Image (cartoon, rainbow, N blue to C red; front, side):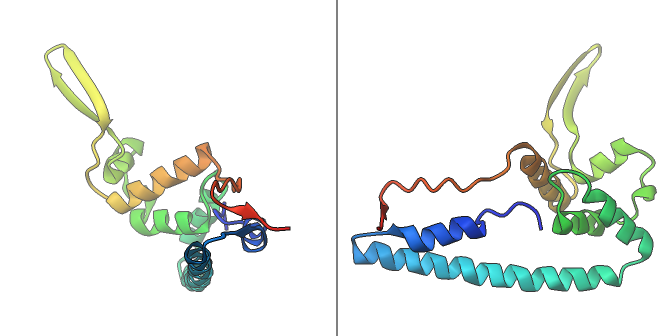
Length: 156
């Protein structure tokens, strides 16, 4: 479901090749790996629950969820979150109102003929804004595991 920070190949490399001479660091690494596995299992359970919940939504909303996933950077959970936060898109008269609902509009100060536009206002629905911004970052910069641990030694 989308880009994973820890691919199976990366995780296997860390488990097999990354080792520390100091026991405290090795224990910390093993603890971190355990937490990664624990978080992955939790995410899998939550994704399954989300999929079951989506099955109960009206067909029109399921269609929007599927359509949103056609956009690069928008995976299943992001699409579900957007639909859950926005509801019926048709309730907004236009894109400006929808973007205003998410707080993704430029800050503006104007007086007479002069006007100044700043960053986004960050008002309204923070959860929707966070998800959309994360999707934009996923679109722009896919995450890669490069395995560049400076203190780690390779075994073998």
